[in-house]
Image 1 (tube, helix red, strand yellow):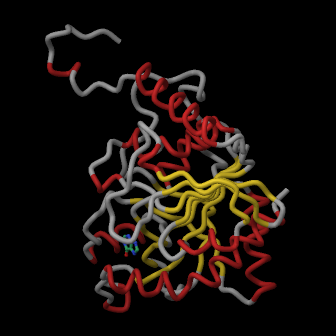
Image 2: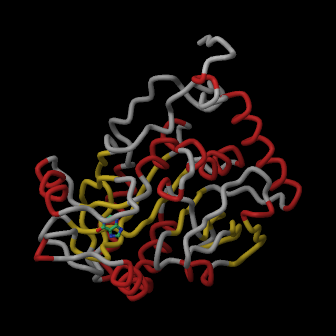
Length: 289
Ligand code: HPA
């Protein structure tokens, strides 16, 4: 691609070379602090902050100590990488993540998952809080993603492709790993935790949706709606990771059963569901192939 250097378009252009250098520098800085190699990256959403308490922690790195790593601005979202073991597996847990609605560019939102893959993690497990569009779901339920709709979000793969990361035209047909989905469902049955299989739709937020939007999303086939995960999962797939994602239903989406979502309800339900969420996640990580 070539632009006249004086044209405004150059200013906002994604600089692939610079971006790749930032990724490699983040990896280098982490390697200076620990030689731990994670097999899985686990992104902890709302309610799962305490998950790290059940880990045998080997190293902790606040995001702000990694030059180039995006730092969360949302209250209640801690920001650190926790390396350690759970169920005998080596994982890198992200306590807190950045969201597109914070004003970060979509490429920056996926820096952490890209860095963790470059560190050695071949599996990605994403978790997040969502509103339920499917009226059969209830707050406190979990949904393992069978697929997603990210068409309302910019793609993290736009701009010059970085061939060291993945291919230009990435298939996302089987984005969410079938074995991990089935494992999550069977753990739910075994532990008496309500786990559904569903289609998730990501929006930018930060406003919750209008009832008309939720009616549209339902017509499009979405079961849940939330403000993270799908674009991170896309970047993970681009890098060839095995991907799994679990939603925690914190509320019924706007207009479903006359629901008016609020941040208070989202946080309160996420915290209440935290214990079951931790059990589900721990078993999933311990038993995954
Ligand atoms: N909509 C979007 N994001 C969300 C919701 C919701 O209803 N609940 C939790 N995150």
